[in-house]
Image 1 (cartoon, rainbow, N blue to C red):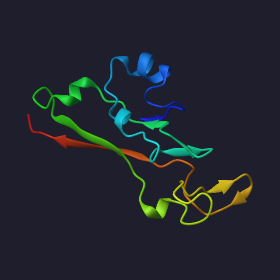
Image 2 (tube, rainbow, N blue to C red; image 1 turned 60 degrees about the horizontal axis):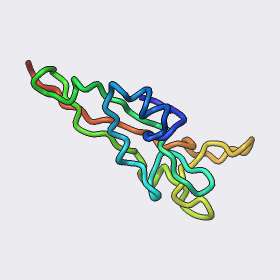
Image 3 (cartoon, one colour; image 1 turned 90 degrees about the vertical axis):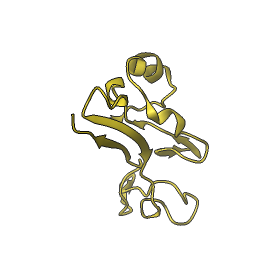
Length: 114
């Protein structure tokens, strides 16, 4: 889990890092949604990669359910040119009072007794 500085389908992720892992973030990136925005384009640099063992509840006590982007209204710019973008803490040296230039991501898991 982390900021990989590449999208899920970028070569560095899809062909290298996620080769042995499941990447649930692949389907979340769209022209309307991502974790960071630059020059009016969404990017999904923040990702969660999951071991295939967590996809099978019969083999482990923990099962992966889903991953998503945490992007509620209070984390977004509420007006102006950047409306809908992550509400940043700083732009250059100017303090805006926001949270981050990226939206966080999260995973949902289920615990099963073995």
